[in-house]
Amino acid sequence: MSKERTSVAIDPENKEWIDSVDANLSELVNEMVSRKRIAAAKTRPDQLREEIAEKQEQLESKKAEVRRIKQEIEELETELEQYESGERDAFDDLIDAVEDSIRLSPEDRKTGRLQSLAERAGITVEQFQQILEEADIHSVEPAATPDVDNLGNMPMLEEENVLPDELVDEDTPDIIDPDDDEYVTLTDKQEAVVRNVVEEDF
Image (cartoon, rainbow, N blue to C red; front, side, top):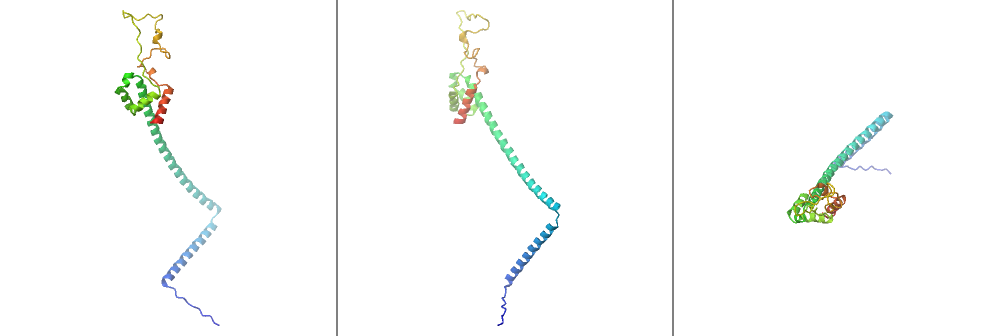
């Protein structure tokens, strides 16, 4: 029995697509073969040079990334320094205002002078009063004046330049003078209390 071949008609559009696929496959195969031939023809030094060049390219890319990250870090550090500097300046202003409040008499504290100091420190007068209370900061009383007799004479002292006991403060060798900065400086403990109040409550 003889076999008959059956021919199938291919649509022209399909034939064109099949031909293009064949052409692409052929081109791809030829390129792969060409690469293999070139690779086989390269000496080991050539291969090493290529690898070195690739690694150097990767390294330059990494260096660029490192430079970018360093730049970002510097910008963040600058911003942080500005923020911390502003905080320090604000805290210094507050400490100055608190120290100046020590010079105010109890009567002065009830007037607008205390509010003026609070505004200078950038806080409300209520917050300022809270700081004074929690830090146990009081007004410094004016220096006492010695008693005089009916003739206006001061009592005689046994030694020259020696103050009577009632005029000597227990903690300092001299009369407390409200205008003397030595006596209107906060102690480390008071300053720490002021800082804690600000950080916790404001």
